[in-house]
Image 1 (spheres, rainbow, N blue to C red):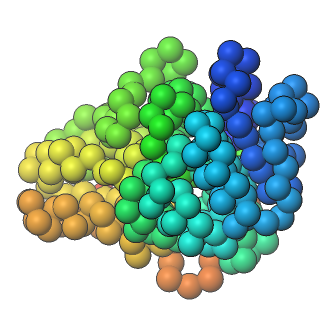
Image 2: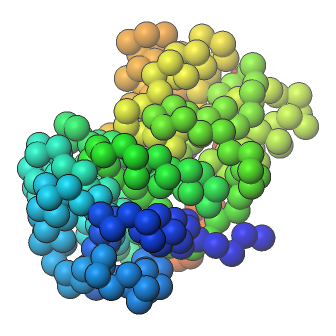
Length: 310
């Protein structure tokens, strides 16, 4: 079982890259411990800035540094980064087109026991609605590594959401298909398509295995880049399979399901089932307990696929 969280991978890659690139700067909002940034702060103190619990300042200072040609990574809990500083993200980062990568840690329901105040169940919708912003939800540690390498070269404003704890591997080390902005075909299939992002990709992959044992061929797409979404892959799935199921650790309003449904409705109408968090304060508990409650697991995804096939 993997014990390396995606946020730790981000720190490791930035620490490695910053050794030869003095323009990389990391900022955080009194969250270096929870963001796994302590080692970066200790080894690169001249490239690390502690803003304190002031998310709006975090984003504005980051944009200012980026305007001075710095490659900036602003790290803060996703629940606060995506809401308290939306205006600064809209104006200072997106409108000004600055090279700032916002990293929302402990995303989704990672802070499960702390309840709705600490859940980020609407950050995809919020930030994807801002022109010029890219939105990424890597599915495992290997894809996170590839994503950071790509973002360091991209220079466009972006938001990366990762969870709090280590997650099971979707890919194998050394075998991680990756093109920035394109979905990844995890498993091909001809009956139904499962489109997932972030931590939901692994249960979608597991669901496909359950369905295969029953003679149902499920295609699995890792839509780690929610914006700009891979329209070509969605249309292809709509044309080649009998239905689509979207799975996300997010409300169904404005997230992955909304984007996939808009594309399918305009280009190739097809039956779509959206799986995500309910439109109500989510129960408190550990992440897996919350997922199991709402059917966001392999068994729940497989059951929806069977229903769609009927």
